[in-house]
Structures are given as C-alpha cells and as structure tokens.
Image (cartoon, rainbow over all chains, first blue to last red):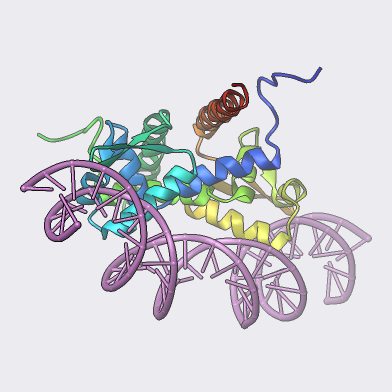
Length: 117
Length: 117
DNA sequence: TGTATATTTTGCAAATCAGGCAAATATATT
DNA sequence: AATATATTTGCCTGATTTGCAAAATATACA
C-alpha cells in the first residue's frame, strides 16, 4: 500500500507544476500583482492602476497567474475580483529579499576592500 | 532618519530583482537542479545525469541560475561544483506542493460531487 | 608535451512570450 | 432595448528563450 507519501520525491510532473508557478511569478508585472493581492482581493481595474499597463495586458497576465493556480477569480457585480491562493508567497519573498540584500552587501564590502590598500 | 526599513514597500527595482529569481526557477530543468542542490553541492556532470539533457544545455541553465544569484560555483579539481545559495527554496516548495495538493483534492471532490446525484 | 575529461561559449532554428489595439462578451444602468 | 462600464479574447509584431551540435577553454594526467 503506497498511499499518503508525506514527502514524495520530485517526479517530473510534480516539478513541472511547481516550475509553472515560478514561471508565472517570473515577470515584474505579475509578481507585483501577486504581491498586491497578498494584502487582499482586488479587481482588474485596481490592479491596472497599480501596474500601469494596458488593461488587456493585465487581463492576460492574470490568466497566467490563474493558470498556475496562484490566484482565483470571482465576479462581483460588474467587476472581477482576484485573490491570492498561494499564501506562502509573502514569506518566501521576504526570504529572497534578505538573500538579495546580503549579496548586495557582500558586493559592497568587496568593493570597499579593493579601494583600501 | 529613515534607515533600516524592516519591510520596505515593493518598488519597481526591488520587484524586478525578485522576479528575476522566480523567472530563473521557472523552468522544469532549472527547478529540478535547484531542488537537487538543496541537498548539497553537485558537479555539472552529476546534474546532467539527474536532468538528462545535453551537457551544453545544462551549462546554460546553470548560468541562468547563477545570474539570478541562486547558485554559486566553485572549481574543484577537474569539476565545477554548484551550490544553492537560496536556502529558503525548499521551504517554499513544500508550501507550493501543499497548495497544489489541496487544489487537486478540491477538484477531485468536486468531480465526485458531480457524479453522485 | 600530448591526450583525455569536464565545462563553457557560439551559432542557429524553432518555439514561446509580451504588449497593445480592436473586437467580442458580459453585466449594470437608464 | 439601448448605452455605458468592466473584462476577456484574437491577432499581429518584435523580443526572448530553448535545445542541440560544434567549436573553444580549461584542467588533470600520462
């Protein structure tokens, strides 16, 4: 009985699904939208104001996020509201921010070392 | 004194840097390699065995990961060993796996509900 | 020094992506 | 029903990505 694998090895299909998530977030406009949605649902028009691109472009980006199961949408009145499903995004972004910070500081320190004889 | 902003707002440059990380991980082969590296450093030839693509393709993918500051490389003898710098990757992948799982289950339940009158 | 091994770089061709405009849809309002 | 508003989709163009093969580099070893 091979059921309920608590931490299954990363098979191809599994990796592909996850890569799809990363790929969807790998565009500045989409990441910005996801980040904005981490504070609560927003309609397309509000997201457009935040990103500042053509509304059709926004809509297409949202469909990519939806296709990756990162957001869900719900029609409310005349608007469509999007919500973030991937709740752990904020935590991960804090971590990547910290890593980027650390590396920027490392580069800074290296530069400083080169300047001082 | 506006120093040490513990959680600065996501400005454009900041978002772009982070999107670059997501983008680099947004390819099945690259994500697979990063995941493998989360268990420890590996040389290019070992990564090739894991991914199973042309060695030149592997090398290119690795340069993308390196360009996004996700991995570092170190020449040891005749091999080049790559290590994961983004330590929080494993944790995030566990989370995305859980979210994907939950959604698969939800779809499953919905199907079941449709079948039963 | 020559040779084998490991890795990177280069040159393409095919595939995919991004962005905007215009057209189509859907829903609310009058 | 007609109109206005919000959103999605079709289509086109230019840019980027991918993957492999061949050539170039680098390093170990005889």
